[in-house]
Length: 87
Image (cartoon, helix red, strand yellow):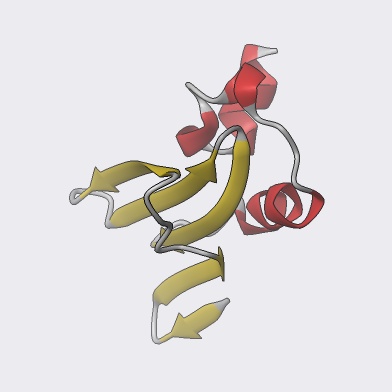
């Protein structure tokens, strides 16, 4: 995690991916938020968060534990809090 004069940045794992990977992205210029999640199958292998890093620990655990995300794939980019609210 990097914090430089009001800029929050988090990255973990393979945030480039390869031919076997799928990339999910969210860009909100108005809020200054960028999220990129790299998936290999149903496993998160890399994440970049810029602007809003509040879910960094959750994404870090998904990468480290190789948690299957098939059941939450369509909401994964929005983070842990919206998933908890939907449950």
